[in-house]
Image 1 (tube, one colour):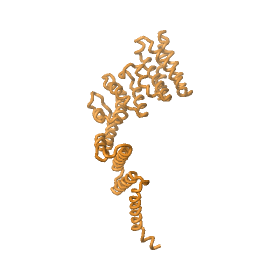
Image 2 (cartoon, rainbow, N blue to C red):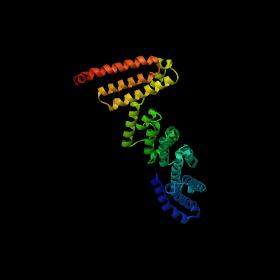
Image 3 (spheres, one colour):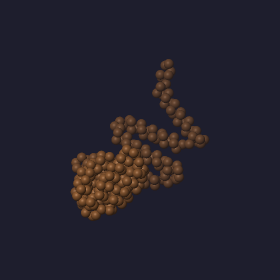
Image 4 (cartoon, one colour):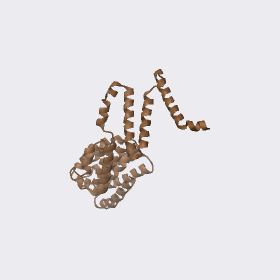
Length: 306
């Protein structure tokens, strides 16, 4: 993130000082450049995140007061993007990530106008904090814009949209359409398509289906036991199903799979049985007797020989 800010800053300087010498109206650019220098230092060196955010706000407001011609200039767009990048980093450090998207839209009006690199930052930020659904609509609108489909960063945005938004939100159909290039003219390169397709197939194959979970919840076993016990059992069976699915992928030995299943059933039996109840003593005693007989049958001859 820091490299993006520094690159934008260097590029802005190379264009900014020439522009300032040619027109007095470009003094707004000089203030924005100086503010960007200060905001980066406050963020990276001084670690004064709120001060860095305030500096970015002032500089962005100064750019917003320029004429329409100057707002659309390359220097203004680069400065605006660099200031937004620093501002997003400052808000993330301040744990103000909830308002990052609204803050970006405050300066870009609509999702379609957000630069690709800033949209990528927002997708990664909300994915990291576990709220990918917040970026779903904004990213979809950005990708549906015909102008954005021609940008160099469109492929990267599409890949992040699939991996960090659609798959975590279980939007498998939309993800498959994007991977196969069936929606609009959005296309991924071979590497991006292969990576996204492998992740999609893995999620579809091994992720528990919501429909099967709902059918399991409506079965007689769960309808007969409502409340905390039924919920705990439902969660336990859910994790057992998930563990068996993972084991089926990573374990090739049938013996290991059977052993895992036996341990899971034994754990389920012990969990559902309260040792404090008198009725549980008979089950515990029987279990201990079976284990003792099993030990004697396996190791008894060796003990008797000694």
